[in-house]
Image (cartoon, rainbow, N blue to C red; front, top):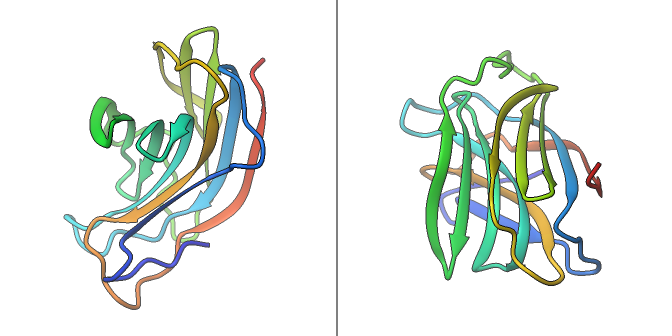
Length: 158
């Protein structure tokens, strides 16, 4: 569960106890509350290919149904692609959305609720790589509903 507020409007965490290789399968089931306002969305992301907190890739799902692939290099964010109103997004209250990203042989493949959304080629970093989660509310507000992560699973890429 991620509780976000006016003081902490985003959080990221990476697994430091073991590392992955370039190929991986990352999946999280998450409940995103409804957007507070059109310009204030909840967001949940799976981070992967991370060398540290300043350098990683992330697939993010927003409470308006947008899927976005970002890269962060030397603390500078770049939007790689965006899918507004992803067809597989479940917008019902308390709906569980399964966000999945696989990295196999230089490809990033993004799924939402079992449906393929996008696949692209990308250069993965060398060495041992981290993975993790990211949560954000665009404009922090005290007393907002938490983002609930029902499950999180990582396996080797297949």
